[in-house]
Amino acid sequence: MTGPSILDTLADLAMCLTAAVVLVLTLVALYRSNLKRHPYTDCRRCQGTGERRSRLFAHSYGYCPDCTGTGRRTRLGVRLFNIR
Image 1 (cartoon, rainbow, N blue to C red):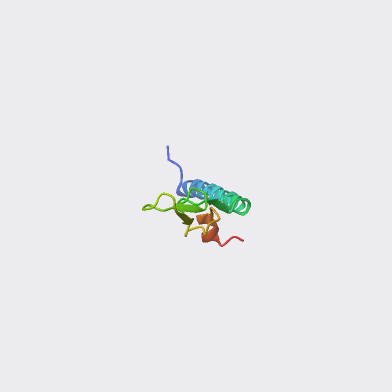
Image 2 (cartoon, rainbow, N blue to C red):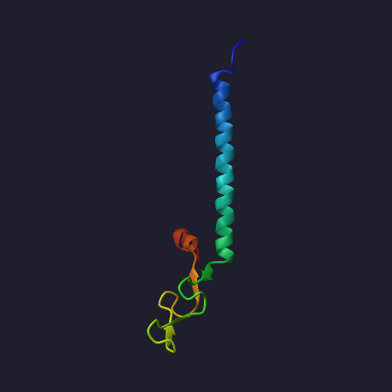
């Protein structure tokens, strides 16, 4: 008895790689569409409030320098894929 030929093995490998590439491209397309719908996230520094309290004086506060007082920042994928 002989085992599977090299051509059968290469065909199986090509099918698996094709399926993996199609899966990855589908996931990237879904991620891009999600970024298009929801491009912003809460600012991590101010927890989405837009203001930062002073560490020294508890009663004083100012606008968050990271989000310029909006409380929102663009997600990393939006900056990487340059989605508008």
